[in-house]
Length: 268
Length: 314
Image (tube, rainbow over all chains, first blue to last red; front, top):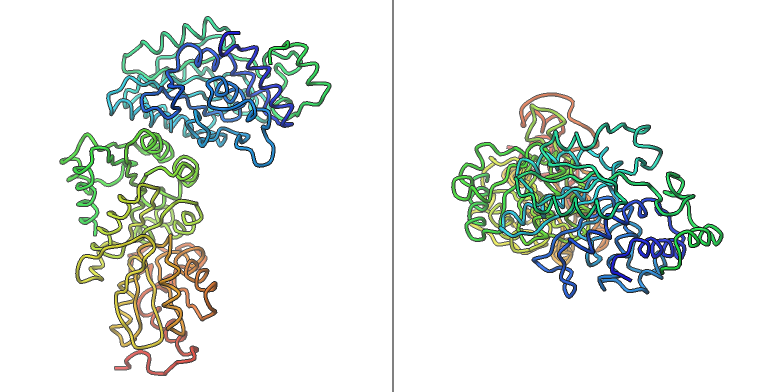
């Protein structure tokens, strides 16, 4: 199997969530393709050294989706299968939200609106040091409620951080309902454009479209920070989880796990 | 004291190009020398303190040494969560400067006054908390902060009260600095502007030891134990709430050594009610020299070694 196969990542997430009896499955499923394509084709890493000073930065600002990132980090060899199998058990190192003590995780997030600022600082550091490093920051659409996101957006434009690529996982849901019902966001691409970004909207599960968007934004050195608004489906890949916000909170049981496995296939 | 701060900033930036000064659009004339000496190491982040601290964390992760400047009401209080999660959890070398701490912005009111910043910051793991009392301590605390290579909150309060030391001091993390010897079995422990007040109390006839506590966290337990062993009581003085500040730190540590009376002088659990000068607000909060003298006299009267002539009556 190719590295960073989306079906495989989804199955790994499912099994982690089942083994650990954890929540936030829908949050992880909506970003699988976005992470898979990034790790497979674009993110520059040194597998021998997660802290390589020449690495590209991947900041998961929406820390609730961290299971999908853990699956990718296991493929890089920075986590073990045992880490994943023991997820959420007493005394284990993988916490329920993104945690910067884990190799490959750049910021401690889950408290929302933090990661983009840290990523903005990393992008500025690359500019100051005159390196060609990129910083990818994946934020949730619900996370755009946080004021700090827009502070970071102003800053990134002012300091011409065209090496900052913000990816918005626009799955349309946040904790208590749809983003339209809770705090209406309007047109997200237009908002980022108005803040001075070069922005594009794509299908967040179409790997070819994702690949093309990353390639375009990486090459565009026009002084503008980038925003990729990815229309996605919360719970993508398992029919009874898709567009059903209960899978922000619900834990799998043997029956729902088996039903999900039947849909995802045996790629673990 | 502010000149000493500016000098320390410029020296640090000249010595190390990785040192960056980030400000939340504050420090108008204060940073003129810095901007002249190292304009490329000066970053005005705008009136966006949350992002500023997150950016500082990112810069520090990538090998820079950010010094983040704001008014104490905003840095650290407004951005406490960024300090906790983005900076301290990864033990990043970010120095946070909170200017105008205490009641300095007396006329501007509650939004700009800061009497809870020590209480907030000292509970965050891996964060060193410093509070210099004069220009010599400012230089020493800046040197200490730069040498630590870990998160630091440096509290800069009333800056024009003059020197409490006669010459430059060197500081180690955790150490208190003795400012005055005393014959009475009483020690005054103070921070910032209140070290001067403690000295003035002694000028009025109190013959107590006076210690400045520029390093609030960590605090040397050994040094405090030696002090606690030879006095009958402690008085703490701070331009900060008595809840969670210097007095609370000392009381917590001293209580683990031996029981002794401790008088905590500082802002009580209340906001400033009125507008006015700094001197006026000290009176409102009963931490002006006259109020403090009465508090200390009353405290000393109840100590085992009390004498009625604590202060000169002349």
